[in-house]
Length: 190
Image (cartoon, rainbow, N blue to C red):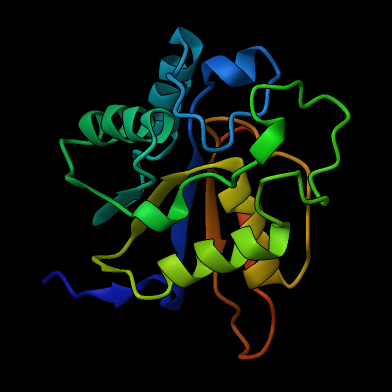
């Protein structure tokens, strides 16, 4: 029996998209809709291999090319699961920084013409809260999405990037009022 559950009520899985053309060049992509590289497709296949022991009931993804392609590769490798997109979880808009080098840039700042971390986090979490699916839910999205989830569920802001294509399990606390936890389901170095 497939029982629907809300997104933040049970353990769920997260995968950042595979390497994109912007990642390869160390550029801010943000709202730019860039493609995956060949390495990105390989990372999606590796993510699927790391998820084979999971009972995935629903797959959700950002509608951007890099996330949707990653989701398609993973869903196909796991038996052809359908994918639903969530428009409100596109990557953070980096405004005037998009297309520029992301080396040594401070993601805690608000770029000219872009979203602040708080605006982005609010948009992302607000978009995920009403989502319902069959557990276990798999979400394929962006590094910014991981940061928003980390801030919301663990109560701790982070500004570094999570690696491409690494499956991560977010688990609710055993005791109400405690923070969630997360762990890698692939290589331990996130």
